[in-house]
Length: 134
Image (spheres, rainbow, N blue to C red):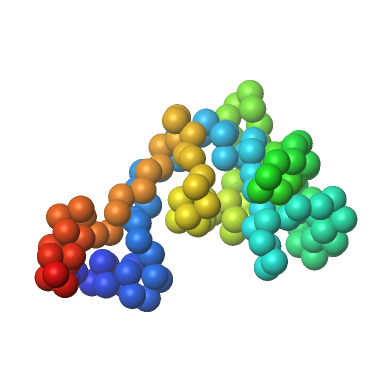
């Protein structure tokens, strides 16, 4: 097994490799869910408390609410130029996007997104493993 695969599976405990690069579509900046210690931010009061703790929360505004919680958009994305106005100084949540947790939450990548996820174990590897146990 190659080192990268071992690292991702057993150290990072991942099931997917993230591949690709940003296509600058802005979709990830226009519908954001924020997962904090206790899960998704669900109330405005919770959001107001978090805004005091971290500068990132001052960059986003509430645009909707659904069964998962509050939905935000970032006010630092320039929709005309299709760029992040604080790209060099963007917070960790943006640097790590998209993360595997999106897949685990039944999230859907925007069709124009330049990123994708590839399973670390191929279908064939999974089937071989299952056949060994039977």
